[in-house]
Image: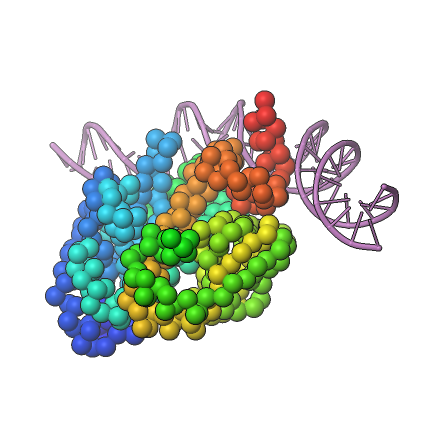
Length: 190
Length: 190
DNA sequence: TGATTTTAAGGACATATGTCCTTTTTATAA
DNA sequence: TTATAAAAAGGACATATGTCCTTAAAATCA
């Protein structure tokens, strides 16, 4: 079965017809390493299913540096949620960290889908619920774990991220400095 | 207008009829200080609108102590989201920290509402989106701010929580020890 | 390819935060 | 109300993490 359909089915049931009729709204988009899908300052008009590749989401924190808030991997949606939901300028940038293939739908089309289809409504709600749970787990990790524990968790749960992402981005995702992450990696080697 | 209806309208539009017809599903529940709305280990069957009062959500972290993950105040929903969404045993306990009045709906009734009503579907999705954004902000705070910055933010954004909640719960919510919070409060007095 | 820029590693020291206590204050229950 | 327990404050010291560097390695571009 189609990768995208199978992903959706896993969230909430959808018939072949419902799925096929929605296809006209989705466009293919290919990104090279370093290309941006969403840019800070612009209203985010799109949400994308990641067929292949990896992206990172980052924003400017108050300390004149960037915080990586998310690594987005294949078989997932990505967007700048706050900007997309509220249709306000995005605080976040989403950038491919390797060759990436997306299926993109724009805000208005998604609203149309929601308005005329209960299954798509269901998918929208169930997906948002899933994202909430991911974010809750992330907050719990940030709240309770030491730098080393957080790094080991990432190593265990998302080993491919550690291979693909820059050290400084991993550090900021874990809420530590590169100096600290360097020490941790040093310790683990031993 | 009714406090609950006005809250819902603020999330997504709903007609008087749609609202009235759903009223049969909601039950009043009063909690005394210390009473639990949701208990760890049980499947969470309910979600509640808080008409009045305050609750805290906490769970056992791996370090043989409790982490307060959320303070729930009036004019909001509360539930143990993961347990409610997936209908699995709850890792969290939700407890009133003062006299509290709830409007409670059970899982099956909510599914019925979703199944037969697009406006309720919309409310469900839009509400979950809002909760996601709150959690995202919380994670950002935990990731980028020092203990003192986090405390000052809470003081500014939710001053009533600082009055009502126990010091140790505030400390754990902010991801610091009571020793650290004690120092911060000492500094601020000066 | 070689030159330039960016990223990562790690030394030396500073600081924030944690751990382990004891004391004081506040809440709770008999 | 008094006795008991729980919570909060805070001293002394330990440790994790941050800041500010310099050097080494890797990536990028002309």
